[in-house]
Image 1 (tube, rainbow, N blue to C red):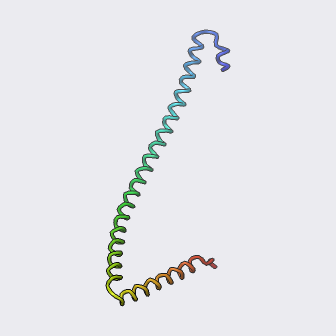
Image 2 (cartoon, one colour; image 1 turned 180 degrees about the horizontal axis):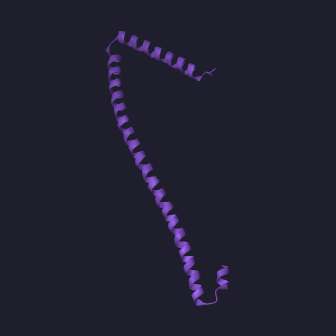
Length: 111
């Protein structure tokens, strides 16, 4: 702003305006460069996340197939007879006991 007070001729005013325009253009160019690098980083991040999501989709599809088959086998075994029901109840109780033992062992403080 002090330059404006010193400017006494139209040529000096134009020179001041030219310097200010160049400074502002340089500032704008640096901001555009930063925005471009930010946009490229976002693009890379999105591509990585899309690949991860695609892999998760494949994994979930295979797990769904495994669970469907397990549920069918479980239903067939539960409907097949009394001996299988006893075995099934024994397995269920055993799994519950193992679950509680593991949860106790993992939750207690380590010494």
